[in-house]
Image 1: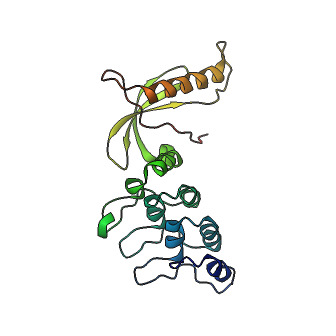
Image 2: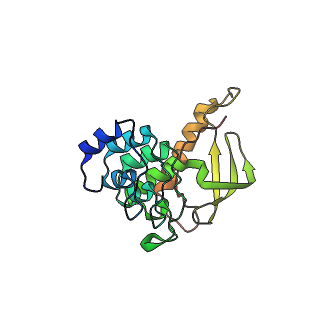
Image 3: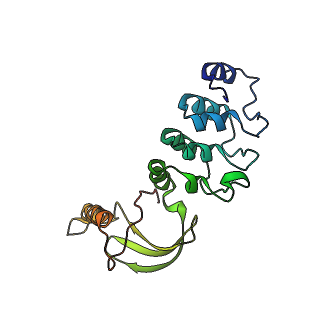
Length: 199
């Protein structure tokens, strides 16, 4: 993987005796290299074979660190789907103390935040409730910033006379679009919007 010999790697991965988490002198596995170089077929094959998505190199960097640092958006999605933790900090080197979210290239950072969704926040207390949602005081886990987290339900148990869930969802989309383009000292700034699955 280190030498970008992807066909050879894929042939070895298909063998039952393959060791998926073997590492080089830097502690990097084939998944680290495939992630950094953005080779999605190799990443998928390694993950399917049982490669550890949480493997750390000598510096504490995970495959997700390398994928985000190098701007490999397609690989980031695969690693996140496999359970990679974007908030684990590296332990040494130039990435020391920085998580995959911290080192993410700009285009990848938005995808990563969307993939993390509500898991990026620790909800503290309810600030208010409305017809379609709830506003929470929350702390962003990667930065420690206190934020207002607004949750809008996509469906309501009983339809309401004024359009029900569709009206609430439409209103949330309009609010998101307006707040994402607005910059004013007296209007709250929107940092991100995402969808989450909750029962």
